[in-house]
Image 1: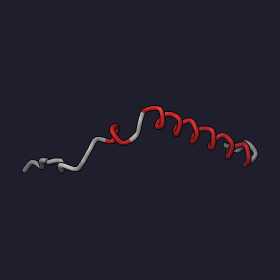
Image 2: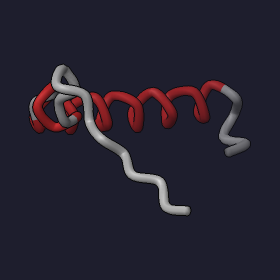
Image 3: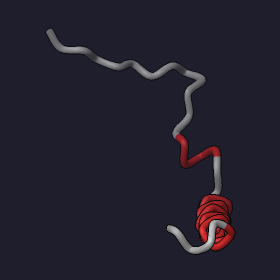
Length: 45
């Protein structure tokens, strides 16, 4: 038996919701927050 996914009329792709610039800047923020958190733990990461 095969499962066929039929998208709803209201469903839009993820790339239409968030612009690429916002996505990339959010990734940079998370990366920076991780580095700061690691340094706060005394460089154990």
